[in-house]
Image (cartoon, rainbow, N blue to C red):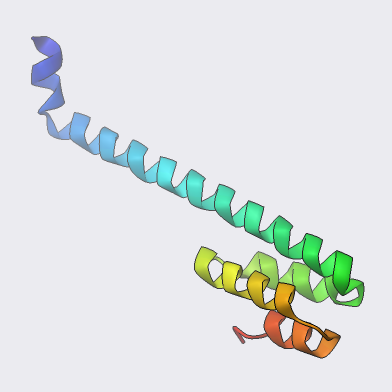
Length: 91
């Protein structure tokens, strides 16, 4: 019964929402790290001269969708110029 009363309090609801926000942020950061690693793996395998540029760009991109798009474009690139353009697409 006390637990039910506490669930309805502002503090409980606030803490619950804060915990949800923190979990979403952790999940977002994990997705970003996976996508950054994938991008760097592709660049190192196919365009090693662009590794430094890719590292810089990957660390500055905070939107998972943008990072996925850059990764897809680099993965589809046939030339170093195409890969460089893909890496700089957000500039």
